[in-house]
Image (cartoon, rainbow, N blue to C red):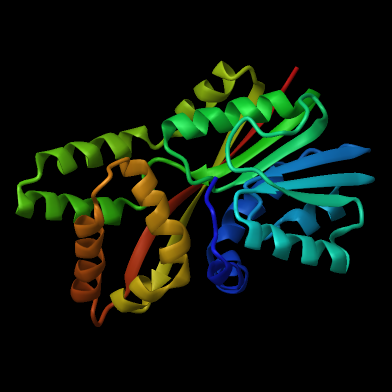
Length: 269
């Protein structure tokens, strides 16, 4: 689970949720199946975005949020005390499986997990373990084709620096990012049935390359996700090159970043 520092949480809540993370939350809400009473666990809940909407949509709802960042959990708890609902709790959980008892939840939700392939499979397995029979998992994440512009610039750096290992890692990362079929297959392998994956193509627009470089969602969500998919230890030079190239090439023109926002709905029977 991604861990937010104390300095990150207010920035994420104020700037990243309304400009970026809401795309994933909106799609998850569209696929949400109502249940009463409902018991929801939000894996990687960060500051508790979407929890208020979940509680409002599901009658007689108890909600548990888990995240690896104590500052994020503290903000989520404070928000819960001002209107999300009294029947909610937020706990620290840094790895899967979590400390929660299995088979107790009607819904498992996760938005934009920062996960490579092995971590994603661990998330799917934990979601299945936590759900009760008939329960629904909602996993929203960027699908294959997302952030293609960053990959192209990273390939440019690898070519200029003659780094074959980086070139191979980029190609592997772009293929390892799941598409509709891969997400369905992975969820079915984890034990789920009735899998449905919806996709929404989103363009993130910036007036200049510098605006993208300085945007909080770039630092807190987009570049960390890109790093996690590359799965290489030393990519600081490549990431620095990407930032500098975007700032240079789009110094006085719009920069557009493409994202394939996907959400999988799956049932445990």
